[in-house]
Length: 301
Image (cartoon, rainbow, N blue to C red; front, top):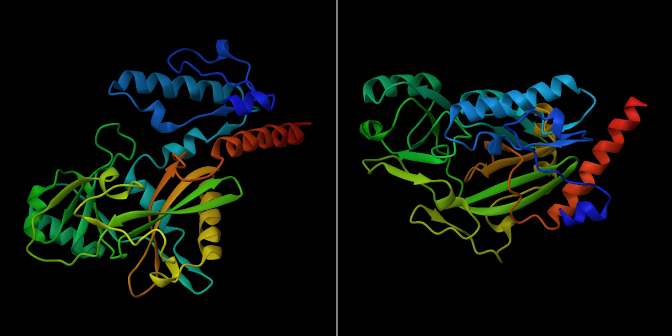
């Protein structure tokens, strides 16, 4: 905030449960959908969204980072993955794909296996809640290794094929046209079999310093190319392709590199992520807000 003040930008924290008109005027709105939905009260969430949407409709001249409507398209993981499927293809000589997924309506193994087979979902699979923004449950996952383990899963949910990726997750952080790539620990390579279903929270396996029996991480000092044939240009092009396609300028994308094949899988996308590990992120966000304001004014003049 201090950096923005020094650059001549006055930051105001909004009360999203009150009409925004009386809190302005504004040159730009910076919103994070997770903060809007970070309440267990459905009425509060509705009120926050309603007040922001009403302001947006009344003031189309005010730029919004990120677009509320486009952010909401990513709230449901079924919609998110269907959207991400549109980015499948090749960048240079690298295959880009989204692991197969399917909606599971109940925990009856016979029903689930039939649905999984039709959708091409294989074991092991990761079962995820539909809601990607719920403050309590959105990061609660289950690893299922064979059909009987589906009884342990809370349904309805989305089941997605687990892709072996040598325990490394790549976080692509986007601020407008700039892309930053960081590496995180992730779940180790797994095989299907008669193993106990594993329930976990994503923070326990993929935060920078997380340590779990599920993850393994290549030493930070080890050259990534010795594990994966990582092409930073491909990662950057992928990040900007998704950014432009989704229409969100502050974005985080989770990418894994499939063991042995080097195919790149998009497994998650987050509007306005935490940007952990990105240097000088506060200054960068401030500069981008200023650029957005100036660009909007230039187009309107």
